[in-house]
Length: 408
Ligand SMILES: Cc1cc2nc3c(=O)[nH]c(=O)nc-3n(C[C@H](O)[C@H](O)[C@H](O)COP(=O)(O)OP(=O)(O)OC[C@H]3O[C@@H](n4cnc5c(N)ncnc54)[C@H](O)[C@@H]3O)c2cc1C
Image (tube, rainbow, N blue to C red; front, side):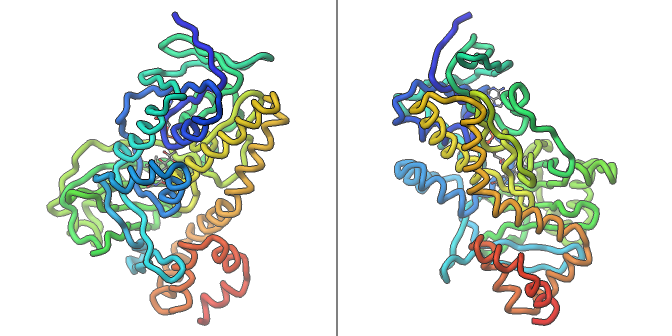
């Protein structure tokens, strides 16, 4: 079997790995990107690309931004519909600085392929597809990575290999904790009826799965991404069979069954884990950094992880460059990476954890949606909260906000 030598090995070519590679392309380092799939590949996901994802793509590269603008299999979504357990709902448009704003819904097959192919086309990145990493080990002089295509060695390895990261398993210490981990299912459908005219994404909350939700997201070509995400602790506590729960809600729930009357699933149910960023973890160590899902950076309230995956890929690339400039690869030196990730992300992750805790109680959820229907002040808060993290922080951590829920 062959042995190849690089400066940096990135394991995983999803959004975090591809972004990291793109950022490292001009660093004058020998970079290998190892990916077990052959792109384009599917990724079980809700396919919602938030405004933040679009911004991250823009920051990564103007060429990529242009390619994303030209990518055809996507539709713009101008807001979110939240349906409370008592079936009352509130529509919240995306508004930024007074103007209408929008995210997209696009199958990950297409979106991830765009990022991956961009990275693959860069002359300074060596890409290996159909390359499954089976073992990772560090020693004082470097790191060795075993794969089905032979072994690789480098000074630094970046684990961008998702929720079931092999790099994390071999080098890290993150454990699956059921209160910080979510189980997710997805089924593509066609012909689901009655979407909002501006393609609002829909989050449907039900007592038995709180704080999780069932989603129905419109896609181009009369298709829809339908799924369910539930905390693993809730799945265990209520001994839920999520496939059954999803099917029963679609078939029987008064709000959904009419809309799915003529709908047809396009695949069997697919499932995958969501490591939530509701708690700080060690995301680096001697000669390794973890990014995206491998570092558990998914928003615990919304389940969104693509933006943080790209963001962490960028931050990891910057840190890797510093490692080589200073010839420092120690766990102590790499702690600066953890610090920088949480400096950028913890504020929002912490708020999302708080929101996740608040919506565990059906009465609180029903009440909040009722107040949002009645009160312009609460509606405005929700609009601001979706577009402005600083406002969300200021309001949610102010006791006066909770009083205003009652009286304004
Ligand atoms: C059901 C569900 C719904 C979701 N919905 C949304 C949503 O609507 N919006 C959103 O923003 N986020 C959503 N997420 C979260 C989002 O999918 C992840 O946060 C995002 O994919 C993380 O990107 P990543 O690059 O870290 O990992 P991944 O996208 O998982 O990429 C990891 C890559 O590593 C490769 N790999 C894995 N193991 C190996 C190995 N041993 N050797 C080589 N390569 C390997 C994989 O093939 C893959 O290409 C959802 C997740 C789930 C499960």
